[in-house]
Each structure stands twice: as C-alpha cells, then as structure tokens.
Image (cartoon, rainbow, N blue to C red; front, side):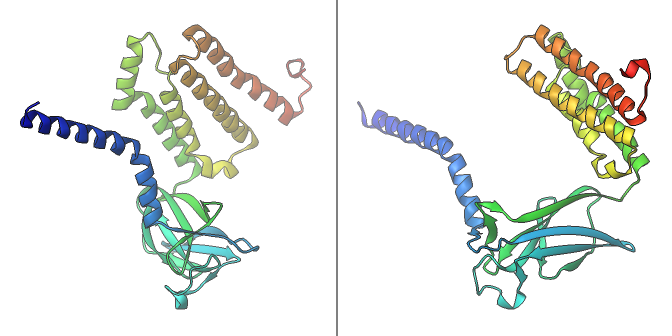
Length: 274
C-alpha cells in the first residue's frame, strides 16, 4: 500500500470512527452540558421545599406572587451557601430566563402577546437548581395576553380547529392522506391538533355549565383514545379495517355518553334514559 493510500485509509477510519462515536455519544453529551450549565442540589433535609405561583392583575400590570414553604429567599447570602433551603427563584417566561425572584411579590413589566408559560424554579445561593430525586422543585402557570373571555376563547378554539385541516400544513397533510386512501380525520397528527385546539379553553372550565364541562371532558377523552388508535395504525400494529371499526365506536360513544350525562343531570324518567 502506497503512502498516499495509507494516509487516505487512516483518514477514513478516523473520520468514520469519530462520526460513529459522535452520534452514539450525542445524547450523553447533551445531558452532560445541561447538567454542567444547570447544576442541581438535592434536597437532604426532612422538610421538603415547595413553591406555588399566582398571577394577579393590578390595573394594566401583572403581579407575580411566589409562595414558598420550607425555603427562604436570601439575597444577602448570594454565592455563599449551597444548600436546598435558602436561595431565590428563577423566573422563566416561555422557557427564557427573565430574572431572579427574591420577594413574594414581583411586578411583571410586560408579557409577550399570545399564550405564555410562566415558571419559577427554586435555586440555591450558588445558582444550583433545587431538586428532589433529580426532579426540579418548581411551579408554572399558563395565561394568554391580552386576556379574553369564554366566548372569545371558544371562537379562538374553533379557529384553531379549522386550521387543523385548512391551514397550509393541514391541506398538505390531507393531500398526502388522500393518496393513501385516508380521510383527513384518519391521522393521529390531525386528531392531536383537534385535541390541542379543544384544550386551549382549559382555563375557562370553571365558567362552563355542567353540560358544557361534561361535553368538553367526553370529547377530549374520545380524541385521546382516537389519537392512540391511529398511532397504532400508523405503526402497523392494526390494519385499516380494524382502525376504522374502532374509530367509529369511539366517535359514537360521544353521543352515548352525552345522553347518559343528560339523563343523570336532569334525573329524567324518560324511557330513553332507562
């Protein structure tokens, strides 16, 4: 083997080996760097810290309330003690770090337009996230800004539902399904979109009537079942005929369960309720 061929061979072996190990170790490296940049301190004391957050609207502003137990905010001890019972809270909005929380009440200057996740994680004075059995001790709430009422939320949910089929992505998905002899609704992705659309009114469940809440829960349960069903078909665990038969039963069960609910709520003695 010539020197040039030997060099090329060694280069190929080294490059191929590095690629394989790089691929195999990717998840391990990601986990390592996440833990490196977000180190944890495990709870060792008997009294386990807890956190609960609330959002209050005061005039045009929002006030974040952070209630902690078995934990103390200690700005005076910054970078001094690395324990799991003193420190501060880390405020995140939509996954982005905003600031440290050292007081029970904190004014938010602004919120992004749209749906928001507001999260606070307990942290030690040495910037280690407090954890119990490697699970972060935190709390999160969800809110939409600007706020809207139940009627507006239902209208928005219907709009999201419509987009499941008639958005550009929805149309493209329907076209692909049609080439396979499938309807738009015979897809776990489409049904997941419908489920997510319906869940968007979750914050308003307390404003629903018993009938509305019952219908909401029954439809969501049916959609979850159908999502699982069509995933089974997509994974080739069942055939199309079996999937369609079971799907029809699940769809019809919504009407059956709603009828049962109405009979229960009205205490009807009608023959149809027997």
